[in-house]
Image 1 (cartoon, helix red, strand yellow):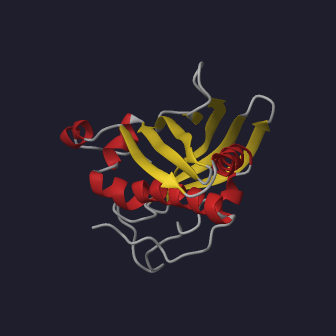
Image 2 (image 1 turned 135 degrees about the horizontal axis):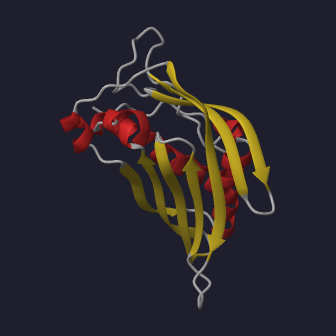
Amino acid sequence: MVLILALPAFAARPQRRAVVVDTICNAPLKQMLLVTDSFCYQFQACPDSLFLWAYLGMDDGEEKEVKKTKESRNAIQLKYKDRVYDRQLKTGDVALDIYVLGVRWWKDQHLGSKYVLTRPVKAHYPLTAHMTATYSGSILEGGDFIMRMEPISPTQTKIHYEFVITFGKVLSAFISDKTWQNAIEWRFEEILQNLIECAETGTVVRKEKAPKKN
């Protein structure tokens, strides 16, 4: 499939986009860290399992018969395939196909990842869980998942959350602000809410679909 893009639109759209949130979790740091570790492990080793909790609420918010557009919630979809994980190094590799508007545009792409947990040299906190991702090909250039956690009481944890993705030049031209908001941004926000809910309650309850942004 050949993708033809007008040069003005190509130049106007940023490659790097991010969701950044500062919030409080009503759970101890130990519990929040456990949930974060579980998310990163499953993302690297068995991403399909995340649909049972961390990705709840992310199913298509539109009726099946409605034709998808660039602004649809599921305009871009990833289909996971083979998985390789090194528990000792905390590195992963997941093969996937990428669909745009329901059509497979890229086959057998590879998502590589590495997870590290760090703290300041002369302090116990904050703890920073950082998972970096790299992609084969040129459709995506990389991504970062960051959870910076610091206890503010025995039962509360201060959180700084970042989910960053850098699109390749071709794909970034497809990602307008509206496409980003409707198809991608809200999912990263939903992930954080599910992680916090899991830390606070021990589970994530299936909920109503997140409202679509205008």
